[in-house]
Image (cartoon, rainbow, N blue to C red; front, top):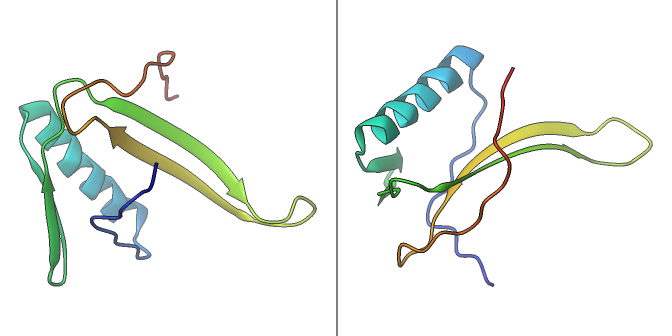
Length: 94
């Protein structure tokens, strides 16, 4: 299925600033509010349903025999028509 990027922002941030962004998203999710992402003149507002699919991915990109780039990705997914998109095991973060 083709992918269309509706919004993208990438910048180096302090861990404290990243935590503040994530906390803001978490607060809006908890209250059932829409989430608006803005950077410069671009913005998008999305309304996650009550039960989106939550995907967490830890990755290492780069050559198999040398240093690469590590990442943790957090993704919320849901169908545009409200259908569920998947179900996996319960996530634990320690």
